[in-house]
Image 1 (cartoon, helix red, strand yellow):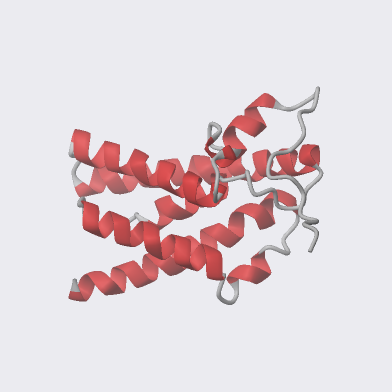
Image 2 (spheres, helix red, strand yellow):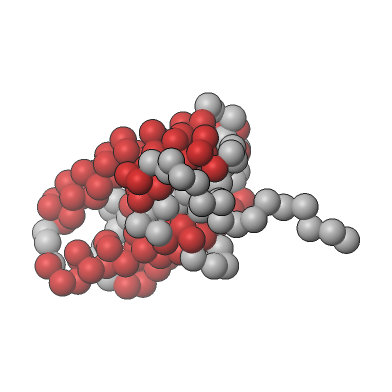
Length: 170
């Protein structure tokens, strides 16, 4: 059977908007293979881990920091994803991973500063991002960057809820 899927990486264009491609691919992690969404998710997780384990901020500072990061990821991610989708000619390019970055950071909002809880959050986010339970999949129908980013925001909220419930017993 012949593979009709578009290539994983967009063709090089003369007039690429640099800031948008940098943000949307999260500094190129979206070009990782296989599974660019996983690469973007892991990059976001590693930034959280580096901040948490190297600086040891108090929980309030961690929460505020994540909220700032999430705000930037969504605030810059929606227009960047829109530009990159238009320039690549794809509705939801796989190499756009700023949405996974925002989703992982949402999932980590109330995470205790340890590896096991962080990894559980990462796995839960990927599970909800891949399976897209109702109404996550429907959010993909939003126009351009809104649909690209907000389905992963919703997946992050699902994962945050489940991770928070799991922490009651674990």
